Length: 236
Ligand code: PGA
Image 1: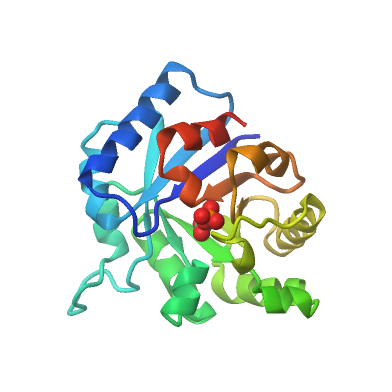
Image 2: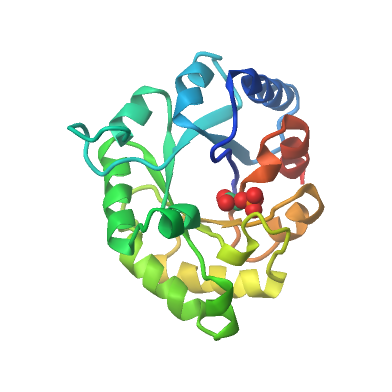
């Protein structure tokens, strides 16, 4: 089965950093790992420039979008605009959006539908906080988020399980815990969706995580910014 390795640059990257994308693409073109698809979700400011690079091995994605296609929404960007700029997928419902921008499951669901309206694939993020986990509520919280924010699986869909406490912290759940949550999500959404793990994925832990059951790939933040480090994860 194909593995999907997705980078999430978050609010990082000036034009000069596009050379990391070129270097990544060149390295993968020269030596592509089998059955592995690679995508980088860039800030909107870099997306159009990156699509001008004529990449062959790296797909481009975006981060967040407005629910509407156009309108009087100063500062917002629609899924249609991101498609126009070269994105094939958009991350929605990332925990940083849920916590810092108050995005509810209903908003995330509407955004995921907007992504599809634009002909792109939604990457919907879910995951529990440390307090949820300590309270033994992980599966309950993830169930609520999946039920409330993930659209139907009749069209392409990617779900990223990202425990909030693992994002950017250097901590990861055990493989057993990842397998438990991924298996649970699989039971909720069925066989067709891809389920990625995200949260402090590094070259040192990527192989183990990618070997865990029900893990179809990984969503990588900090370690995706430099081509050399991201390549180590892809080759894992
Ligand atoms: P991280 O971020 O790899 O830096 O922990 C993952 C994410 O937030 O998507």
